[in-house]
Length: 223
Image 1 (tube, rainbow, N blue to C red):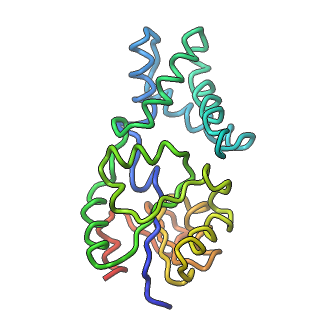
Image 2: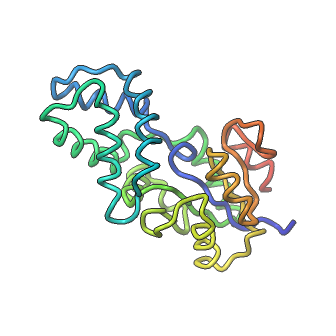
Image 3: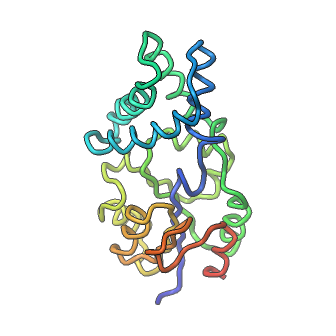
């Protein structure tokens, strides 16, 4: 195996996550408008809504806002679908472009800083939209990354080969020299593996041969 020179990191679910949860953020915004909802129910419904919309819609440039409008509407539909939905969605859309509702993974910054100091190249590879740029700026971690590869801007999503190819072509690096860390077995782990990268799963899945639960464990692979 060639020496790893570049670490690619997934964003939502790996580097950062909604805090305290998607349902909690949605619920707080709704209650400010007098809409009474249960955060736990919203969390459950969000997962279903996201998976459902993902089957029929895209998050490509120019389409991502409508994608999320469908997700938010479906998430609230069992509890509320009244006149305030459009206003609520616009507020949530803007809110998730800021750092406020996001929390960085424990010790992620320290670990990535250590790796950067060791001259590893760091990038983000995310099935997200352009709001991620402002989120990382507000969380003051954008400077850690040489490049942000965002699916909506590229027109491809993990696990499609094209999005991994974009990293290789843009940075002129061989696939064998890239390690990718992500929380999805199908999109991150298998996508990277099939592209000839070195995949590491963030979380727990018996199908993944290489996995970590905390960012500092990366230092076991990258010395």
